[in-house]
Length: 143
Image 1 (cartoon, helix red, strand yellow):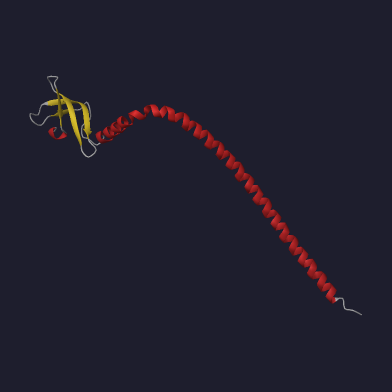
Image 2 (cartoon, rainbow, N blue to C red):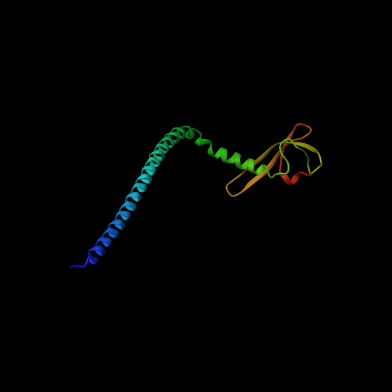
């Protein structure tokens, strides 16, 4: 009589091997489904971003025509920005009543003049004196 042990061992080993294989195949299938879901989400995001880029480029193209009209005023805008940023740090503003150093006469600041070149600039005040005459003076000549 032959022993039934090798048959049972082979049967148990094959069932165990089949169950491990089925678990591995199931996990691979689930991972594949998750990746496909992520791919679909990313493709939808990519389509949405593509639409956004198209909208932005159309808006940019339509605005560039309007901005080209103002391009010739770029240096004026830069000069105005420089003037405004510089005048914030000055002691006196337009409309202030000041005393002039040579004779301590009173004057009203009409405007601040800022100019110069790329390597050098100057700041002057245009003031109105009591006799309605106007004078351009440097900040050092004010009390």
